[in-house]
Amino acid sequence: MGYLKWLGHAAFEAEIDGVKIFFDPWIDNPMSPVKLEDIAKADLIFVTHDHGDHLGNVIEISKKTGAKIVAIFDLCEALKKECSSIECIDMNIGSLVELDGLKVAITPAFHSCFHGHPAGFVVKGKETSIYHAGDTCLFKDMELIGEIYKPEIALLPIGGWYTMGPYEAAYAVKLIKPKIAIPMHYQTFPAIKGSPEEFKKHVEDLYPATRIIILKPGEKIEF
Ligand code: NI
Ligand code: MN
Image 1: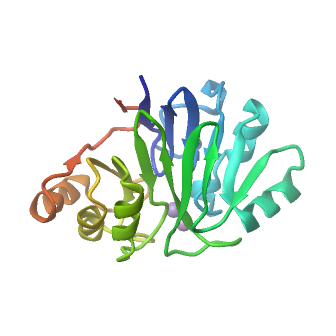
Image 2: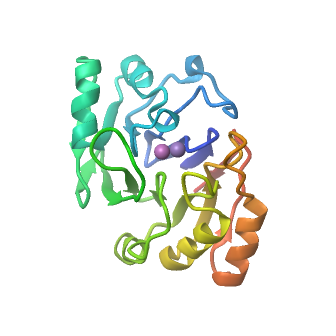
């Protein structure tokens, strides 16, 4: 059985088909239920972009566990300069590859970054498929991501400062049509005020077929 656990902010830990993955593991975030010392195993670490609240503890976790970092080409180049011992799998927008038996697509995100281009990921295994949107605004091609990759679970930022807010994220749900959507990237600091209850309410109006699960940091869903 697999699981998806929220580690606060945009950080998630999951196990799909026995492969242990992390998205944007900023474990030092103020909402994090775990400490770096608690992380013993990781196979793949997906990094959407290189802002500090996403790059977080990526290098430390990779060094400690031997996990491969998956990111956009230019960011991989920068990370390898910073730490030559890490293994980085570089991709670019539009790539669809197989890693450790999981299908991985890198999707566009509209945001900013220091290296390359901001991105999202769809990670698909037998047990489930997860779309982590990264930091982004709402964009119409989310509809294509939904149609082509059919993610069962969508992780969407709702903070409303730096990214989509609750209404835009609910509209994204309508475009992506996942079975489950989980809000993230809100209330970690005062600026990102987005309310998960407001997000849920908008989804009930716009696309009630999707179930909204509001996780507390440290909570997980199983599949
Ligand atoms: Ni960012
Ligand atoms: Mn961010």
